[in-house]
Amino acid sequence: MYSRFQLAKKYLHYYFNAYNGKGHGIHSPFVFDFVEFVLNDTTVYSCYQPIENIRTALLSNENIIDVEDFGAGSSVIKTNHWVVKAMAASSLKPKKYARLLYRMVSYYKPKTILELGTSFGITSAYLASGNADAVLYTCEGAASIASIAKQNFSKLDLQNILVTEGDFANTLTPLFLKAPIIDFAFIDGNHRKQPTLEYFLKLLGSSSPNSILVFDDIHWSKEMEEAWLEIKQHPSVTVTIDLFFIAIVLINPAFKNKQHFTIRF
Image (cartoon, rainbow, N blue to C red; front, side, top):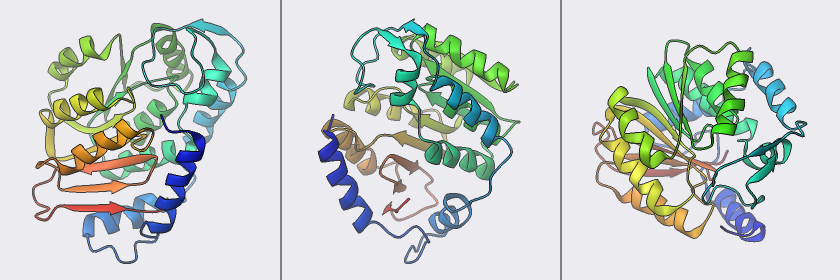
């Protein structure tokens, strides 16, 4: 992964070279609409505070849990024995981005949502809260983490989440049989190039033209940036939106000209 200095340098380059976050100069109706009504929606929705209360509890939880291998996911903790609060501090998606995912689901109303990388369930809760009529399939490799996530879903009374535990290599194929069409996906399960590309290709085979794919941490490392470049160049991809810490991919052939947007957020 990149050092903090390298990442900060990249972020500054992104910030000063991106389209401003108001939509000026963006000539795609879909992307302008996204910026206007989703990215810049400042409404404080009723689900926000209960979910953030769960985050606060996690950040003060001193319990120690045993966790299976996390691959390239953590830059902070290198042991299999984790203090929950330390893991939460290093792995939970900041509320700015988690709430954006909520607004995307709320606005576009996907029926079937896939999340790779449940963690303690904060992002899952935002995704599931965005559309009570949707089903969220969320996958977590570590049973001890999935157990805490399930407890959090129960506290929030979220009934539309199905958790799959285990190595993604073994769980994804059966999951795609259960949910043959994925309307919305958030990929945050493995910060390596090859697995990320494999997830992308699997999703292409289970997506509709209106599906929205969101990838986390595309600038996390050199190989993640390489994966992001390959995704952008794939012939099925028609529009991408780079928000630096997350990126959005559209595969709708109705968008005739491939367009790539980098937008300040």
